Length: 431
Ligand SMILES: [Zn+2]
Image (cartoon, rainbow, N blue to C red; front, side):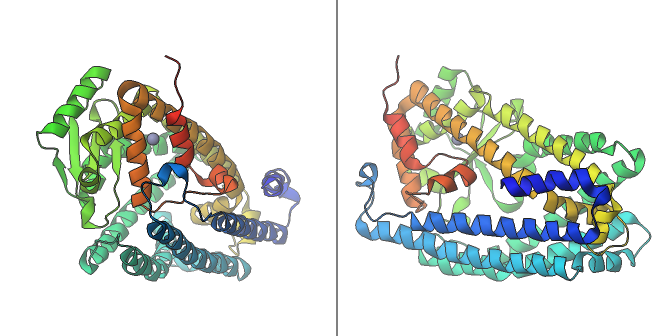
């Protein structure tokens, strides 16, 4: 990790004296490093499973379903290793045979318009990945998830999801390309500041309207009907002074038996959606405690903070992207005769990867701390035992890994492992 970070700095400082071959080698080293790092972590994590069931969960697992959880993780792990191996080989081949440059020349030959050129370039890469991903996604849904009893999707929903996903991605990709190119052409040098503002604005809007615009494309949201659960939720939100008006039930059971809930929106546009599968499996008290945890995130300003951090990260990215796009030699290393927007994005994605890894780890550290705080909030304002019970059930139902490797947790986990959360909830809090 350190070595590749130093390499990145080296690239930015010494570009004028570097040859395109050296830059290409740096890209290759970064891609190999990323692949090895991920593979080693996955391997450590797999090896870390223990045979005995943790004490806290003895009542929830029999040895048969525990074994099932273990096998489920192993099978999913194998599939994802195969998928990342293929994408690793593909990326290496594209770098080695200067495929990105060839594809760029091909896209440029279609039109004078840079927006069309870049759109074609990214569409081809996206379509290739999309088609390559279909067998994996099919196998994951209809073989693995099916075998372990999670899958509720039929082929029609699966295909419709894929088509909708493809269309939405196209709209978003073309929209973002047009916006970025418009900004770059309007401001030339120093464009990163305006690009940053534009992207931040889009991110905030997407966050505000996610539940109103994106979710309904895939799922049906119905307001939670009057009854015990609604009364209890309203009583709780009145007590803590938090307006929980838009409470929806989402038809998650259409696709999977896994349970979930999400919050979306900012300020008065806040929406909570509870999966029907969550409501089905949990008592009212457990559901309110899960909501109390989410309310904790708002009350402790976690939502606002993580949005601010993401905006800062976007700023760093835009700044580094402008630096990257100003060196023609980087484009040469990928096989393109001159720098353009799409080759710049590809080069940037390689060079940024070690920086992104470090920022990701820092954000996960913060996120895990916030999860403990939100749990604590739910315990103080509602019921810690109900939350413990809900967390155990959620973990057992989704066959989650009970013994993740500490290094894997450190790098990838945005939530603390279940056992740590239960221990923290069990601790006596000084009143
Ligand atoms: Zn949380």
